[in-house]
Length: 96
Image 1: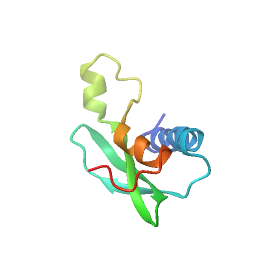
Image 2 (image 1 turned 90 degrees about the vertical axis):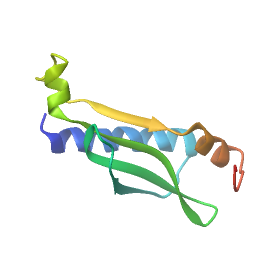
Image 3 (image 1 turned 180 degrees about the vertical axis):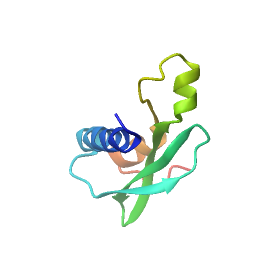
Image 4 (image 1 turned 45 degrees about the vertical axis):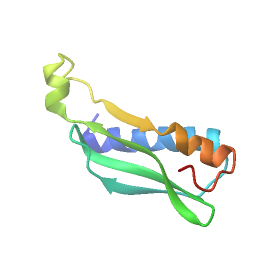
């Protein structure tokens, strides 16, 4: 798949996961920078009248895939903050 197809698949998959965890919440994607992915994105949800970042993600640089011997594939990277899950699931306004 192309980088654009991989990005669309990544977004669709992570949006589904977020709906499964948080329910029917308003979401938005925001551009970000992570050193090993392009594009790099953050997914935010609307929580307690403000946007809350819940995960970062991106399509892994093709040179990394090539160097790992899987250059004929596209890869994703993503990370979900467990503290963000706790804030939303247990209605904690500020976890600091």
